[in-house]
Image (cartoon, rainbow, N blue to C red; front, side):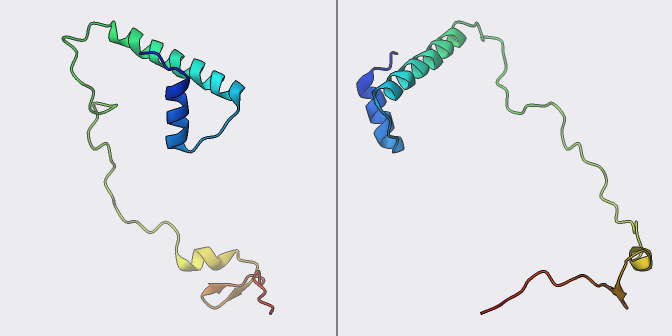
Length: 98
């Protein structure tokens, strides 16, 4: 299959793309290069090759989800520069003015 000017214009219309004559020429060349590459792939013998469904043969490679307490509330507040009983004190960052 060869991409010509009419096909590029149709694709550009469908994709809502606009470009000048030089851009259209570049797109035509690039699309033809892509189709040549795909044709090269069609030359390969794939009769005994199974279709690739997943990129990896690994299945459910997940660790056990175990809830552990890594930092207590008191430890988190221990080195806070400003705190107010159970909370961190921070400067106001949002100023709503009308």
